Image (cartoon, rainbow, N blue to C red):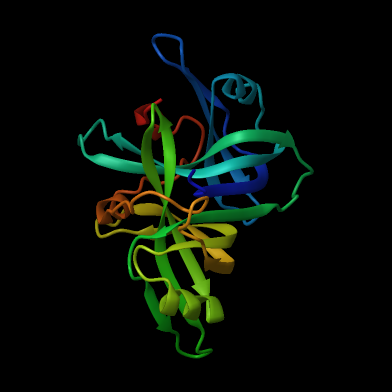
Length: 242
């Protein structure tokens, strides 16, 4: 049994109207909405079937707490036919929350997909390490895909990962979700998602630990990350698969 995990518990305020879609055969329902979290960043949250029906009834301005995981969804751009990727939170449960609750907890367990980037900055001489973790995700019918979680660590945690967690090694990172933006080579503003680690460590490969092969990291995935929706009616939602 695989112990790979991708758990996100986060609170925020609904800032776009929930958008509900139903598959042509009526067997699948998905609802997506925008959620602004405590640091002002906006994320997209999706849910399926019965939970999607309940989420579709939520209103802009409501404060909720989400329990789920971060997922990266590939989709075809309708204009260019290129494969792009959209990162969002797949919700498993949601609850009413106090306004400005500020909950942001992120735990991920998987395999290091590369020998990460380690450097010591000028000025404060703070050590920093960035890498990507592949977390297996079951897609049904005994099929698996992977979500790629970007991990950022500082100081002793950065030194530990750089020295002891090479490519292919199973490890965990626990901390918070950070959402930022950057400008790509085409001068388009894209979104970035990172697990900023408060603690890191090894995970056993023995029975009951992390299992399975190591998925390969794809540079194109990061280059083609879609921007976050700015408001209700964001066109990218219509392109995304159910």
